[in-house]
Image (cartoon, rainbow, N blue to C red):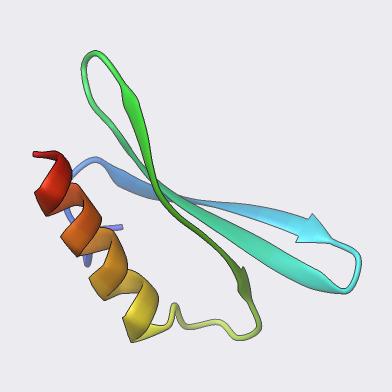
Length: 60
């Protein structure tokens, strides 16, 4: 997901009534999960994008 940062991706998990999204980044020595949330629309909520950015900044 370029809107969050380089090497960031979104995993989509269908679960009956709702779909779940997992935002993560792949580094050379780790996979960092920065967010998991139910998604009800096509667009990722701005709140989730900002939370992921803050968590990655804190990690770096």
